[in-house]
Length: 103
Image 1 (cartoon, rainbow, N blue to C red):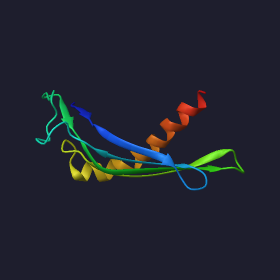
Image 2: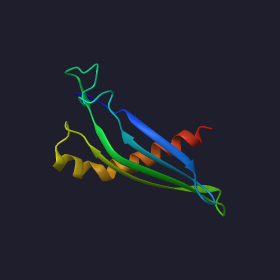
Image 3: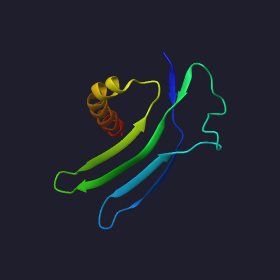
């Protein structure tokens, strides 16, 4: 099993009205597009674009999270990515919820 790493640049700001938006993309350390400490056990993934929008739902005291991400991972075959993506998206949301439940 190989480790997957991603180096991202993230920009976030408050939205007009309520909520926040965060936009991110992958960056490389230099123009060769290779990780400086690359090893056989690690593959660098590339996030072409990710947008996260967080808006409050005042009537319930909760928030709405909209996330759209376009990722390319050379270590994962396309058919497997398409099969696993929906369940991993649900897992991503549950992980975020668990973080805030602990507070």
